[in-house]
Amino acid sequence: MDEIRITGGVPLYGTVQVQGSKNAALPMMAASLLHRGVSVLRGCPRIADVFCMEEILQALGAVTWWNGHDLYLDCTEADGTEISGSYTGRMRSSVILLGVLLGRNGHGRLGYPGGCVIGRRPIDLHLYALRELGADLLEGPFFISAECGNLHGGTIVFPGKSVGAAEQAILAAVLAHGETVIENCACEPEILWLCRFLRCMGADIRGEGTERVIIRGVEILEGGDFQVPPDRIVAGTYLCACAATRGKIVLENAPEGELEAFLEVYRKIGGQYKVKSGKLIADGSGVRFPVPYLETAVYPGFPTDLQSPLMTVLATIPGKSHIREMIFEDRFKIAEELNRMGAAVAVCGRDAWIDGGRHLLGAEVCARELRGGAALMLAALAASGETAVRGYSYVCRGYEHICEDLAALGGRLKKDTGNYFYGKNTDQ
Ligand code: UD1
Image 1 (cartoon, rainbow, N blue to C red):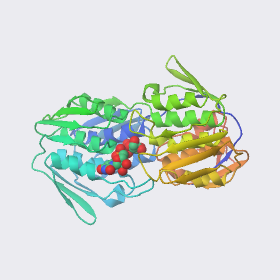
Image 2: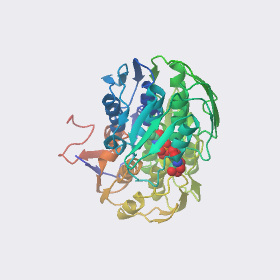
Image 3: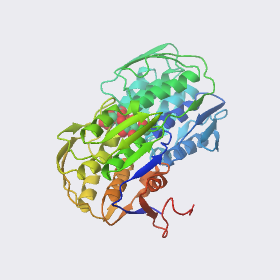
Image 4: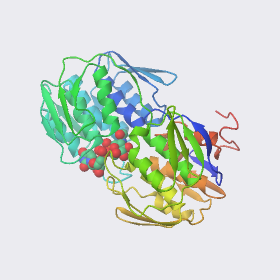
């Protein structure tokens, strides 16, 4: 079940809907613990990481249920205070629950976040933020234990921008006594959405979406009822699929305002797009220009999560491209796999040089992480012949129906379980 076979060579053509955002939904789920009652996340993606966070909340005592894509979280009795390493090892972003446990219970214990698949992923900024708000932290061999009488407001000056640490600080500050000022706060849209959700729960937050966020703690939060925004990374991935196959696609609810840096590159490589009646209409048939230099950056820069999908596109464009990965130092794992398909990508540290335009041929390749896995699926769509992409379960962590969507656009994909092409049969 962990392999997808893709027969490439067909330009993608058609219309798809963009799923709800993983990185927005996860912190909102964590935030729901701050209310002793029911919160609802509408349009929540049904993906492995969301299910993992749901399991963690259940283990803490929450009752959860789904109605279609609406996720109900009843945290009335979610008074558990310990999250074991068997969960935190599965999903790194569970670390943001530490501040939530403190806000709700005054103490908490959390296993260490696992997996170093895209580089070193320290949590020092998370712990710094919690300490500034009055938490007493003990870093044991297997657990981090946190205690606080009551969290109090404070000034948090992040030395570097971190999405997760910003979310941690915000989640801890909303119920703390007094005012918290967060300086050099990351500005990713998912942080803005988290703040909007918390405001709908009654939190007092100003400056969200900027580098200076000010939070005045409140006594109690109400239940939230909120629409999860569309996933900008999934939208970008599908636009890369369109570019890599020189297709033409329509995205029904793409958050183009959150994709500006990506769309600028899309235009530079020869892609075209327009937004009409809420739809993003993309034409990748003219994609032909390499990218002499691009570096990933914090928002509003080019997102690291779209670096691998873009690398696949650049591998199809004649000429030399150069990418520098500034966020996660080990995020070029797909280079070797792309080369197995005939690409010529040379990696040295944070730099990848792509000598593009070689003929991509079907091969057996292996995904080792989420976005890289999606990027390999795109390479398979662009290649001639059949490619087996192993490690598909990584892709399922963040893409709800990537196979169905790509098949709806004309891609030829089948599972390893039989001769089943997505979109053409109804296997499951
Ligand atoms: C989030 C996203 C992920 C995205 C990343 C960067 C979620 C669930 N995941 O991850 O998809 O790729 O933002 O946009 O939302 N750092 C520290 N100390 C810390 C925390 C981070 O040094 O305590 C460093 C990291 O090593 C990295 C950089 O900060 O170099 C950015 O990481 P961060 O923004 O925290 O990423 P995540 O929140 O883990």
